[in-house]
Image 1 (cartoon, rainbow, N blue to C red):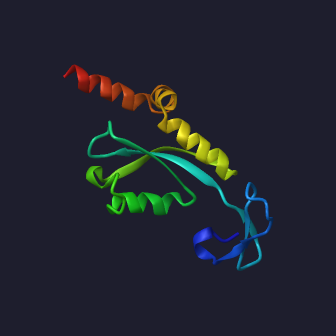
Image 2: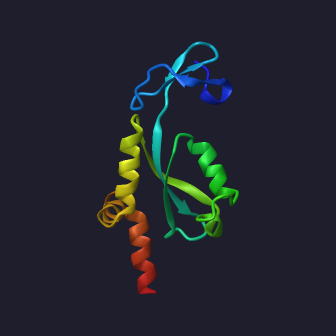
Length: 126
């Protein structure tokens, strides 16, 4: 199967349901669109993180590192700390909102990014 970058994708989903999006490639193969919630950490300041959502992780990281995002250009370069993939867009949207909320931020620091939390504690002691 050819990778997504090697084939042209049609504009019409195979199924009409927005929660299950399959796309037909030029070769007639079908692939599922995945929705990723990602967490970036700044290489300039490892305590700086950014939470976002995309269907193309590599393109999104390039955009952040090239300064195309006004929210992340001050702390370039960035690297992926982690990402979670969903087959349904509404679940990715809900999870991104949760991580950006107070209780989600606590979950993020305790369960997904404990090394960054430790770095923040050490920086406060200095």
